[in-house]
Image 1 (cartoon, rainbow, N blue to C red):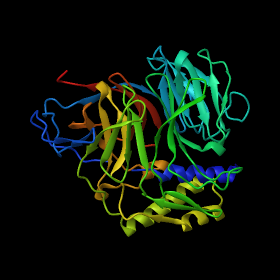
Image 2 (cartoon, rainbow, N blue to C red):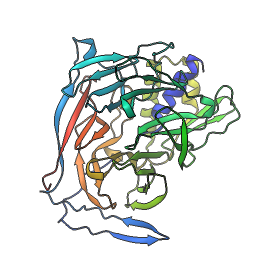
Image 3 (cartoon, rainbow, N blue to C red):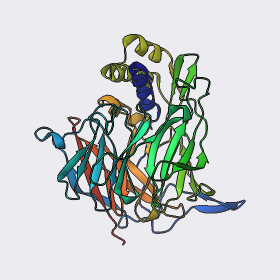
Length: 417
């Protein structure tokens, strides 16, 4: 893939999946929903009000902040996209813009840097997509551009890589399962060497720590967000897109962002439970469409997309009638599921910088227990994106009003525990 085409695809993927919630009134300690059995699958219908009383609501408290606006270069981040922890509690962060993995100890002190910009052994492109700590504390960094996963020993030495040929699909997301498997979302897309492949929904598949593919967990629904007509890319913003995560016990959670319908599946992908709520996405106004196209033009121009390619993309961009309902899913403490909704249309804010202009996620996350019953909502700090949950701690990246990024650890406080 040439440099221009890779930037175009990266930009399209960046803006293609966006999507979040208003606060819930306090409950009275009881659940007013219902559960219906349908051929062995539990359908959990939730009301608007959760179980938690005002006194039982979970809150979060900042425990650690890593980063600086200026000074030590090891504390400055360009574009943090992934984070993981090793068995000693060391924190590994992938800076996509800096093309490096920075390692910090549990107290936030800088330890070392893994990788550097380039295409040689132990180096990363600008579309390295995740940092994964696999069993034995081996570090794995999948890289779309270089079509490989670069690996390092616990001591930081370059180890044996494994291939990720794009002819087998485009890897969009990576998560480590509690049992040590790598779970990967792959979407079929036309690429050099395999141009006749139609764009499909893709699959969730598993790999072992060495990178060998083990099995397919779930087939994902098809999407119309990004399509090709000949050599011309077409983008339909806010088309239904799959969302997924893993709970802390390894169960798979899957949804499509246009409906508040969340599937709970076993660790092997079998459907066991469906969570439902009555929520509808807001209308995408003509003014919103115009503003979003302007923000796309600005963002892709900053990324170096040539004017002729930029005009082609914008000229072939259209919008669904409504915003998505769901923005993200997260496996939270105590086996809970956290669901982020899209903000109401009248609360949309397109004034952020770069990709932040397309962050429509609410600060409120709906929290469900292991049975799929709504407990209530937790509010996360502004401009905070959760990336990893460890026990009662949520690790993520937060941007300040100057767009400076910080690694932040939040502790979930549970007054009824």
